[in-house]
Image 1: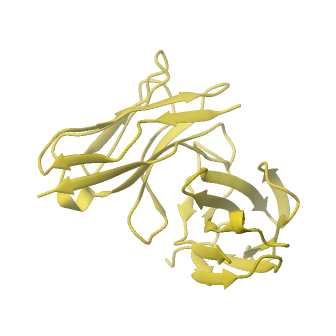
Image 2: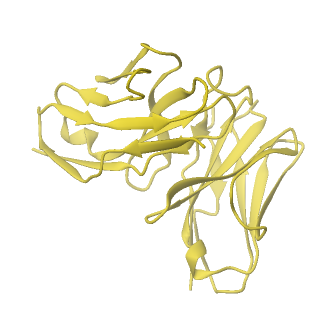
Length: 115
Length: 111
């Protein structure tokens, strides 16, 4: 069974630009969650999508948004990029039944650098 | 809200040494507890989990016991190997998909 895939793996953008990251979950998984990982703040939850609906949301500004398609693939978008948005963005997929019944599987991440 | 406090790193040990990485948590209700491991250039992998008080999670020689009375979930391994060098994250979930992580502990094992 193929794992969670994320594209692109590396990205360099300039301040003020916008960026779209993609995540393909494990086949059969309907939930996709996104996390931001930085040296200063660690791993922080951005949002979770289940069956094309945002089900949970973290404490990030509105510049961070996402969506999920009918095939469960998900994208996240960051508009008006700031230097502080430089991070590793991880996505995780699961069946969507929540802990402890469920387990999340993480992708390798997209490394975003904002200059 | 939920929070996880994890032992500061980095931790450097010799091969075959005993490992303990401390983790305590604050949560409402009865969370599930996890240890994840991140190898260089990779995403997170679930190492072990425990879903209720006194449960012991174990995998690859690592163990952690869910201690409700001390709100702790310390990671232990009796004899570490060079291949265990990685960053370890303690995490909890209060029943939904959101994971709350600790800050991570970088472990380096020297031969």
